[in-house]
Structure formats: C-alpha cells, structure tokens
Image (cartoon, rainbow, N blue to C red):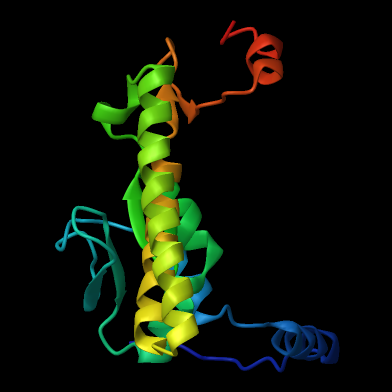
Length: 190
C-alpha cells in the first residue's frame, strides 16, 4: 500500500495581499437590500429557508422576511424603494405607511374618460372632506383625529392614483392621460 504524500505550499505574498484587499473592500448588503432581492410572493411554500410573511394589504402579494428579522429590519424592508418597484411589477401601487392599491383592476382599466373623471372626482371629494375634517381637528387640538384624517387623505390619493390606468390595444397597462398634448403626441393613443 503506497502512502500518499501531502505537500504544503505556502501562498505567495502577492496572493495574500490580494485576498486581504478583497476582504477590506467587501461591503455586505443591508438586510433591506438582501430581502428585496428575494421573491415577493403570495405563496407561503415558495421560500426554502424559514421566513415569515408581512401582509401589506388584503389581496396584495405577501412580503417574505427571515423569521428572525427584527422590527427595524422589517421597517427598512418596507421603506425600501425596491419593494415599491416589485409591488408595481405585480400590479400594485405601494407606499410605505399608506398601503397598496391594485392599479390593474379590470373594472377600472376599461373605463371611459367620463367614468375615469367621475371616479377621480369622487376620490377628490373624499380627499377634500378628509382635509376639511383634518383642519377642524387641528383647530380644536384633536391630534388623534388630525392624524387619522391625514392617513385617510394619503389612502384616498393612492386609491385615486390606482384608478387612473388604462389598457392599450396591445394589452399594455399605462397611466391615463387627460392632456390633449400627450394624447395627440402619442401615436398609439391618437
């Protein structure tokens, strides 16, 4: 039986310097960045490691976070603009602290300009009413009511924004424009 010999060769100084400089220049991504690179999914079985899910709003995709993530790490993830982009790609307009609203709702996509105007007007009316209530709350010093009305205003604005999308003949979903210049300047819309 032949003995196998193991021979040790020391690394060169250049190789050691190269490894050290790589290690010093390495910056680990933040947890929010790392989490946003994961799949935003509504399927609880899609992740392989132990995760928990955050429901931003009913019927929106669930956001997967590691099971041991702290509250601050979860807030960093929810504030990350990358999450807004990923939610948009899945059909939702998302704003941290406000919630998410579906913008590709089939009931809203096929509305005529008149109907879009009515829906926008109704949302604007709700926003004005909440603003008036918030002003009164501010004058009488009811801070809790003032905060609640400010939250309502932001939700109404998000709702109004989501209802202003249309589906083109090609099936693309784009923001609805009421500007004559934009409509006349677009070959697909004219």
